[in-house]
Image (tube, rainbow, N blue to C red; front, side):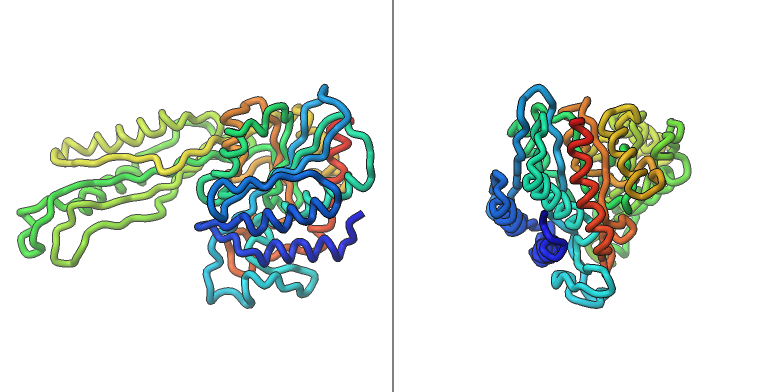
Length: 385
């Protein structure tokens, strides 16, 4: 078995690898994991698909091909750390008060490393398994899920029956998460001198009307999801104009919509367009366009799916209580996977705390990290049992 201090040391090394995305640089983390797996006799492949960008795939072969494979999956990239709000270097992986601090400690390098250690322990135990156990470390989840798409394009998920993703869940088993639709709306006008605004068409004024219409009158025509609740719309960025004395000819608005499984993104876009088009009675010269910046499907694994039943049963045994949540508001690599494999069973489970994700002084408790190793180690034979 991998000693606890070795597991903690591996996590610290992965945290010290700066995989901030952009640009990513996941290759460094992939090489650390590759060395660890090879030391423990596990076959691996590092797929460097761009300079410094890489996925890693490890495999623990089963005895036959009759069973679908089980995939343990996590991403290696992290969001930017920021700066002054941290109490210590965000890439020092400082250990204090029973916690490891660093960017990615919760989201989600602790879960990723715990999965790697669990796979090494399974190899050492030598317990026969009827199907393959795969470990996929992906690049780019925080920006465009490029690594997950790469795995899908290469056919790695052919024959995979279920996936456990190590997102931070505070030890809960979560079988559902929201989708995402990121939209940019651009209004276009005509520039003019600021002293003669009547000679121009003010794109910011037009955007003011667009924003008001969306915030006051746009409604989601869907009931709240039992696991995920209601969809949300958040206005998160707006910019326009070039100078204080120039009538702006362009203004951009970016909105973040989090969706539930019952919603069709195409219908949502049509609803938004209809609301904006309704402004033309008062703004006949309104000129706008809508662009989809990013689109991710919602994920909802049925409760009677084998991986969901096994994972929740193990959770209740491990923590002596059921999971407190059935859904997550964020999206994961699973959005890309179920787009190509809609019957794929997916659950999220990780030692990190999603409330600390993307925050200064991100950390994970050592005991939570250690407990998750045992969880991942046990879920494999139970899934195949």
